[in-house]
Amino acid sequence: MKDEAEIRGHRRSYAGAMPGRIIDAVRRVGSRNPVFMLDEIDKVGQDFRGDPASALLEVLDPEQNEYFLDYYLDVPFDLSGVMFIATANLVDPIPRPLLDRMELLALPGYTDEEKKRIALQFLVPRQIETSGLSGSPPEFTPEALLKIIREHTREPGLRNLEREIGSICRKIARKVLQQGRKQKSLLVNPELVEEYLGPRKFYYEVAEARDRVGVATGLVWTETGGDIIFVEATKMKGNKNLILTGSLGEVMQESAQAALSYIRSNADHFQIDQDFFSEHDIHIHVPAGAISKDGPSAGLTLAMALISLLTGRPAKRQVAMTGELTLTGRILPVAGIREKLLAARRAGVKTVVFPEKNRVDLDDLAADIRADIEVVLTSSVEEVVDLVLT
Image (cartoon, rainbow, N blue to C red; front, side, top):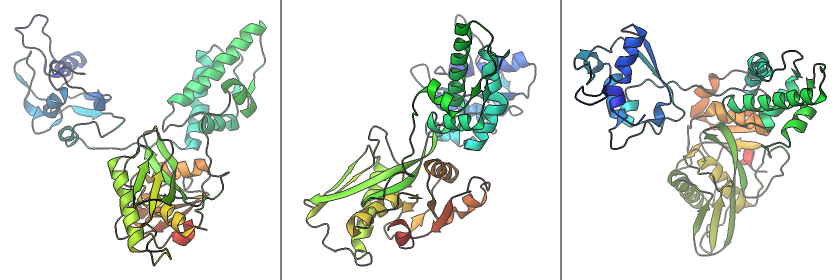
């Protein structure tokens, strides 16, 4: 939606004038206090025809919408009895004044077990019916669904999972048609998934990777849920330069500078030569350089990669961490704890390090999400150096 007139309506002096969407929907539904669903409100645009977000300020503000004026109706209309529900994939694109009128409810992504149950009960039967296989429906094993979830999709929701299930059902339907006779019910197991969908699309390299000096495992939040990153650090002869690569945002670059300054000011504590930076350059790289990365939550991971590099102690791949680092070595809380914990489970991480102040977020999580993972809470870097480094 780009035209402000779609909300406020057109003045009746224009040819083809009509009421705005709000008043028109109230007229169609025949009630003065319906529920409005504003889908994808973060996609609202603005151009020469006006800014719909400005018009929505009056619509969503309970102090103003009692006298909402539609230009076509040209008399005030009371919208205070209407319940507005908006959806968005991202909060950042929503204008701040508009966001202040809303109560924000974050809906977390599904766990692998929840995805499996939803697929068995809803997605698989729907795709079987859509593909015309109701006469002899194939049976998907739980192991096959978990293989699709972990190796062929990476998302907080279910859209791509249903797409992959539909792809398998269509290939089975084609096979039935080619044989020209009625086929017995087919069992879809992990081997058949690989035959129909090809090799895996997503890899989790933590479990099979070896520990390296200067490479630390971090946990991050992305649009598709939680994920893991590897922060790599190396040094070479140079002149006190800090090189940062990997498409890092301004906040993440500042986190790296703070981590280096903290280590330089506490070199004796970590048994590091105080002059290590005087004749060397430090290069920090975060792989997947085509993907933009930003935020303060990688501060602890950056510090551990540098300490590993400068002490020569390899960082344990199966210990992942997240936390904002201050210049004095304190670890501040971060967001997305649930998603990061799920990402750690998928990747085969055995131990995760979270800030102490995120304890309340962990207490709210279901027991199955924390299963098989040791959670360590910390408030400073010094507390976890021996845990992370060999």
